[in-house]
Image 1 (tube, one colour):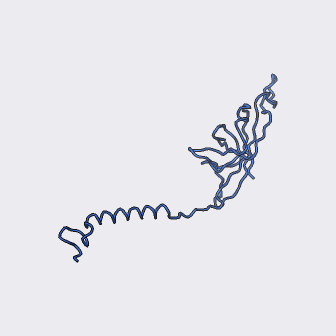
Image 2 (cartoon, rainbow, N blue to C red):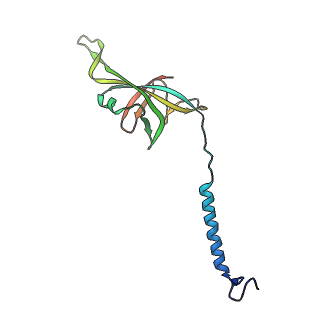
Image 3 (cartoon, rainbow, N blue to C red):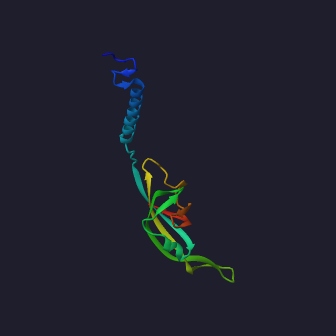
Length: 159
């Protein structure tokens, strides 16, 4: 028995071109299975937890009602690893100018100052704390942005 007969069949069973096509198809299928099943090692990053207290000054009760413990900050079309852990409020303190030119601090009857404590998970090897792309330092203005609220806030404490 010849390896290749006069009709171009291998061992008289299959055409050599058909065999090549079948082998290419099998190689592509095997490569696809291998690619889908290969394990990608999960990259673990050691993090350090920071609690940052933000103050939102003189806003309506609607803002307080829209905030919930467990909400995550939102930035650039994705959620951040910044989670609200506590929310507190008090009547807003505003400056009032008297007729004789003095300035006194009064509580506003409708507006609130809201204090929001957030948990920030930051890489342990990073010396600075970031919320989105903003370096979080006491006194820094940071947008408090969730999927339902976006208001300016000031960092007043870092623990």
